[in-house]
Structure formats: structure tokens, C-alpha cells
Length: 454
Image 1 (cartoon, rainbow, N blue to C red):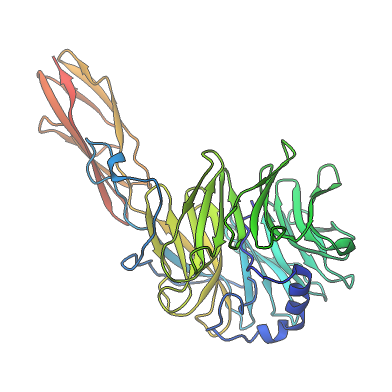
Image 2 (tube, rainbow, N blue to C red; image 1 turned 180 degrees about the horizontal axis):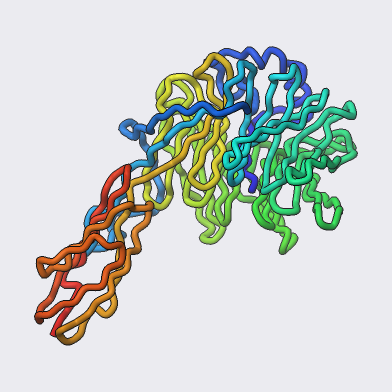
């Protein structure tokens, strides 16, 4: 799955990437205080460190969500802010940038050999491999066992792919002007500047067929999920987010505000991007299923490089005087962030894992954070009424991976089973509560007069 996290450039992509290659050696020694635009896009046996996000200074708004939606007979359903447990992935003194993650595999661009290579680390096997070519390789993306990147081995930028299971590399493009690839399933998309016209192209690995998606002349930085491709486009005199649906062959303009929107990422029905309509850069989201746009951040700070997976959105943010990685959970409406006072950039997310570029060690390393949250208690019962003696089966439906359960059945009896069966012997109405806990916190759900025994 591709989560587009490349840094935005107001120049044409071809010029930007040529400049990147010219300056790559100076980038390798860039200062830790560089801004996202200055910092290069973003393994070695892992060293483990730990940290936790601190939400005390956080401010996020998620439109159209009200506390009135909370179920009346449920207490304290709000989960705690996510905790971020960190792990250092790279430990060499060279610079590593722009990580992407899929399942247990992390890929990034690495300068340890004197040129840019793509490195891949498998979290399950703790083994690292690389593309190792004498030319420069950068701007990688990963899906399952396939890694794609931009490659200069033929003198011009082309898209290459490596199958990690067979170690076979395949040249995807021959145009000599291909950049910023993304991959999902059998489909690879990229920016192509062929014939003096910048557009988005797609290659189907299964059919070996290339298809132009748009040739507006100013389309760049595509991301793909399923049959939907999104990108930023300058055709209207400012950057907008556009989408193309392969299943319907329909192009849709997602943003219409006369400011700049760029760096899109997509997961399922949700598209996120950077938006400067408020005089600073915010993160916005559009839900294709409801056709509604939502502003995610409201701070006067700068927010860049959004990525999304499921209900979680990550980005980089400078509200604390340095660049931190922030994560916001749409389901729990809770936010957290990295707390090291160095700079962290270029986040990507898969499941409960976030990866980023980190400057705390004097050079740019790859770090990974694992998210954990306190549980949200929920349960059901069957039957909820009947004659005594009444045998009731209670089913735990809590989220957030609880590790312990405590039931109060309302008749001065209790259980610590996950989904217990309880027998009521006397007539009456009984209030039931469930308290769940894990390493991060606890939560209680209570249903008043839930069980009726006749």
C-alpha cells in the first residue's frame, strides 16, 4: 500500500529532482535544524530505545463530531492518547531518508555507500538487503514483496522494481523522465515528464501495459490505493488535489479552494493532503463516501507530509519549536506525538507502526514507533430478559486490545473472564459494568437496568 509522503515542491518535478541529485552530497551532511523543504526526502541491526507521546499541548479539530454521540449508558468511553514506543532502525553514521512501510518491511534511501541506494529491513527476520547499484536510487515505495524506486543507472531517471522474494529487478519505464513512483497491488504509478508534458502514468505488472492517467502538464506526486489514484495538479493556476478512478475511468477534482493543496495520500475512502488556505499549512481530509471535507489541524504551526492508514493520520509538525511526528486517531479523537527535541520528518504508517527520518544522533536515521492505546470498553449480552433462573452470556466487544477484564453483574457477583456466562437466580433489574485494562490504561462501560429477570 502506498502512502504518499514526499515533500512538496512548487517547481516542476523534473527540475526539483535534478537539483536534488546535484545537492545530494550536501544533503548528506544537512543540519538537524533544516526545515522540511530543506531536508532531503525521506539498515543496520536495530538498536532499541523507547519514548511516549505527550498530548498535553495538542490541539486538533475534527468537524461534525459531537460529544452528544456518546451512548447514554456508557461511562468513560474516551480512550487515552496513543503511546508511541520507539525503535531505532539504522545505526550507521551515513544519512538515511524517506522511509516507507508495508506490513513488516521498511524501505528507505541510504547514502552509506557514497551514492543513494534503496535499503529494505524485515522486522520479522531482522535482516537487511539493498538494491546496491553504482548509480543513485531514491524515492522508494513498497507493497508486499515489491519495492519500486527512481533509478539513474541508464543516465536518466527511470522506474525500477525489485521482487524481494526472487531478488529480480525489472526496469518499468524507458521514457528517461520518470519520478516519484507509488505501488499498490499490481499497479505502479509515477510522474513522467516525457515530450515536455508532465503527467501521471500507470503500469500494470500483470498485463505489462502502460496507461496515461492524466497529461495536464502540471500533475505530480501520485499516490494509489485500490483503483483510485490521487495527485497534486497545477492546471488551475494553483495546486489542487485530483483523483482518477480506474474502475469508472472518471477523473474528479477533489479540492476547489483557490489556495494550494498538495502532498496527497489515500487509504480506502479517505484522502489527506497539505492545505495552505488559512495562511499556514494545515492537514485536511476528504471522505469520498460522504463527499465531505474536514480540517484536521487548527494550530498556527506548519504541518507537512501527511500519511493515512485506517483511522490514523500522521504528519510532521513544528508547533513545539522543532519538527515532531504527530498521529491523530479519527475513531477516538485522540492525538499524540514524538517528544525528542531533535527534528523528525517524513512519516509513513502501516497498522500500528509509524516510521520517520530522525535527526537526534547528528545524522539522519530511520526510526519506528509502535502505537498502543488504552482500551475502550464495550459489551453485549444474550438474552437480556427472561424468567429466573436466567443464564446470560456476556460478550466482550472492547477495542484497543485489553489484557484484563472485570465484570460486575449487578447482583454482587463478579468475573474476570473475557466473555463470561452468568446465572441470575432472583427477579429484578440489574446494572452491568465492564472494566478493561492494558498497559496504557483502563476504561469502563456501564449499562443501567440492562438485565431484566422476571
